[in-house]
Image (tube, rainbow, N blue to C red; front, side, top):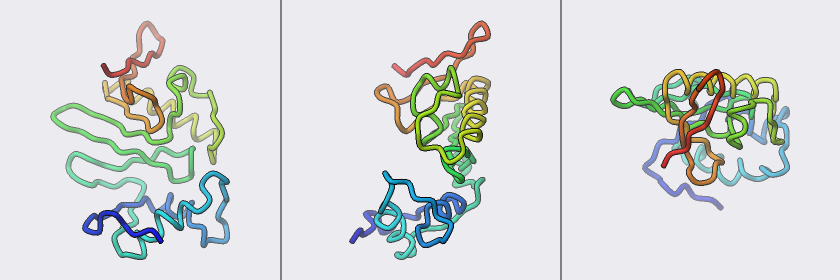
Length: 161
């Protein structure tokens, strides 16, 4: 049985996302490649009393907040970091490939709601370009992060060095 690795840590789960994956619910939608993950990785943390369910928008500290990024799943969220006038978004599963910056309609299987996923990709691209924010998607190969730039009306992705 899984035992939480960090017994002194506090875990924050977005309530909407937690409920989406809770296999004990009658409305749970099975995703083949995630079978067993909730029971092995999330439920033991909850049962140990180490987790807190938070709202879709939640401030963890003056510099770090959780923000909604719906589409991939019903409660998908991302972390927003602000430090000394610099910003970064840890976007999780919003993007699976840099092509999705250029064309947010490029689809890789696995979205609960494709229309919301596309809208979220468009919103995050615009946000990052406007704010010059570093974006750190979960699934990109090296380099794992970069900037979205708008040049002559076109979007480009500039990877970190």
